[in-house]
Image (cartoon, rainbow, N blue to C red):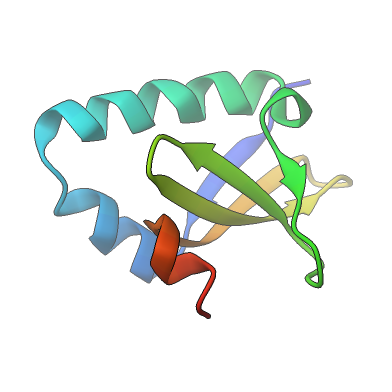
Length: 84
């Protein structure tokens, strides 16, 4: 049950500007998520989306079950995600 992962412009820019070691760690996690999203994703309270935790970073992700698509709408440091 592999899902396709798409990123918002904000998420793409944020990840692009991270150090290479963090980018690799995030890339590996997203590969794992594409194979089995619900092992890693938790429902985000008060929103119609899921959250992903990778160290000090968080992502808010929309899930389309019919199209098997994950859309990373926001990816940022933990503190900034929860202030939105």
